Length: 287
Image (cartoon, rainbow, N blue to C red; front, top):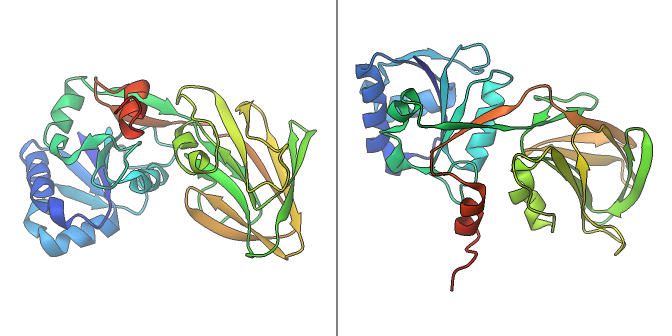
């Protein structure tokens, strides 16, 4: 089996588990594809464990992997999804970071991950993405969590005119406007007062950031719609942010958002559940 591995380079505390995992893949005859940054990091620390690595690729979209393993936090998982691209490779997130909504499995589960996958004990959950059409994007146009139009100066707010399938929706006077997938509803969207959305729901949330009118509230729209945002302001630039990647756009700036033509396939263990994850991560129902 071909296994793609992407990971954070801050893994010093977990090197014994990573070394044992890689050696087990080698013993089982699996072929590993690894991102260059992780490979170069591990090459300095556990070079003997890298015998299973057959290819080191900046993009794994064409690697033909049957399984992808993301080792880090939620930010690492987002970068893993970008690394895999439009390939339908299921991604298992192993959490060595902080909160871990996307990477629910702990490092202790790494040893049994591949056997569980081969035995059919892991469940795949499709997660939708947003495709962004904007001038001069220097990176992939897809976002798994959210897309935001933000003011680039600290002093001046911006105006964002939103159109839904060509029909005017609202004129926002804000510090920024955030459009989130259900997956991203527990990320930036949650911190600006947007709703938590069940991951399987075919919707986006549109949440104003520091709105200058009390009537501007988060709304939920169907993700089959096309959303066009035009930002203007007293400053010559706004910032477009997509899953932590950012680019400066000249004003007036127009971006169009639509559902991507492919999904990210997230692997979870048989005990995973949306309600139980929220209850645990947000400490609901605890004294």
